[in-house]
Amino acid sequence: MTSFADSKPLSMPLPRLQSGKRGTFVLAVIIAFLALLPLGFVFWATAVTGWETASQMIFRPRVGELMTNTLLLVLFTVPLATLLATSLAWLTERSDLPFARGWSALCVAPLAIPAFVHSYAWIGMWPGFHGLPAGIAISVTAYFPFLYLPISAALRLLDPALEDQAASLGLSDAAVFRRVVLPQLRLSILGGGLLVGLHLLAEYGLYAMIRFDTFTTAIVDQFQSTYNGVAANMLALVLVLCCLVLLGFDAGLRGRRRYARIGSGVARKARKVSLGRWRYVCVLLPIAAVAFALGIPAVTLSHWLIAGGGEIWRMNEIGLALAQTLVICVVGGLATTLAALPIAWLSVRRPSRGSRIIEGCYYLASSMPGVVVALALVTITVRVALPLYQTVATIVLAYVIMFLPRALVSLRASIAQVPAELEQAAASLGRSPANALWSTTVRLAAPGAAAAVALSSLGIMNELTATQMLAPNGIRTLAMAFWALTSEIDYAGAAPYALLMILFSLPMTALLHHQSKKIAGR
Image 1 (cartoon, one colour):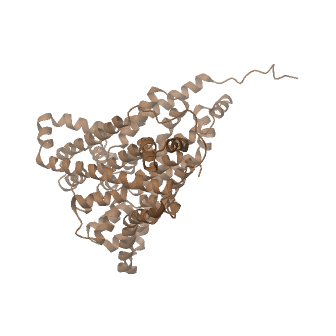
Image 2 (cartoon, helix red, strand yellow):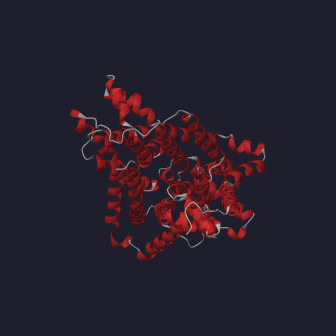
Image 3 (cartoon, rainbow, N blue to C red):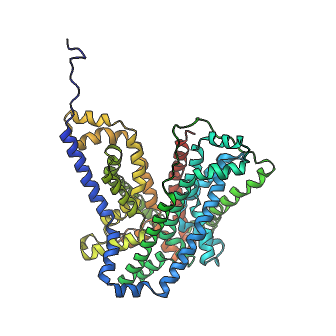
């Protein structure tokens, strides 16, 4: 009989594991290269144009006007959205606000409504509402949930002992929030603010509908009206530089300050602050936010659906658009998740400086507006790979570039929960690295992969600019059909498409809200 002492330890095929790591790393590098193609194209186009021509196209009054509009939009929208989201998060998480859980869900619900549908709803109610004030108001109501989600999640995870200690020193509730809570929300506020800022730079439909000119609307106009490649490329360069400045500004504000303590603290809920006589006054804030973010779209959509009657439900056209949208969402979501898998695995199983650099390339590429990605891929396919022009492969590549981080975050969290020893055991039984990865980690991380596909598909369903510029002939998504009808001032005909986009986005929005609650164990 063989004793445990005589048994040999499990031998691992290290050369095969190392080979698998190298293969995964090479694949991740190739995907990073493809993701950075639009950024490389912008700088290449500038170099080919020449400094003299480029400077004439960049340093002109029109660009100055667009820059002024963009700066004003960002400088007003981001602080207002931050103030609104932080106030709502504190009220729903840390106060005795009536119906707090319901308000929390309703504050996330606007994410299910595409930004251009928000604009459509506001214009339907106030047709003369245009320009910068309209851009700021609609942007705040459309994008504040991007700040509300991380801030409310951070509030749930804070250790209440720190606040108790501050209160024991005689600080008021307001002072505790200002000196203890708010500094710990810094990363959440900066992350959400960066996301809102990048959306403001990238958005097209919202601002085109209210006739507010930004770099994105100007680039699309140049592309669609005159196909002026030089002018569009130079505007794209300025837009990319704005994105890079925003990323650098965010990195500088984050700094190297420590936000964690040794130990997790006491696992208990924080004390709810009593609003007292202000309880029913404070409830007016979430009522107003929900009324503007959800009430206006609901009223406008209901009006046009009722006014249009049964005639606007052209089931052949709507059914075709819905089917094509679902197919392209599933294909794009699967492709994005598969593209994110190599770097997600490396960042968890084999973290290194190289994997962090590749991951940074993914995030940098995804920060570029969809119009820049589409413009780059159009030019590259026309000049270098003409058979790929206006094909499904090209538009799927655009989706992969834009939505990689959505899939990466979900995959990385799921892979981290799967023991690495399972892969090693599968490899020791003679399976190839790819087969070992598939039969263990990928299968056990399937829920995270499904969430990655769903999150990517949600972004694809509501994407307008890149889809318009890259979609093959015959493809007409819900977003494209909606935009075509609103461009013809057929607001009633566009209403069913808007309704379908919202209905299919709601489940994913509910999942996001559930996941944010689950993180804190609630």
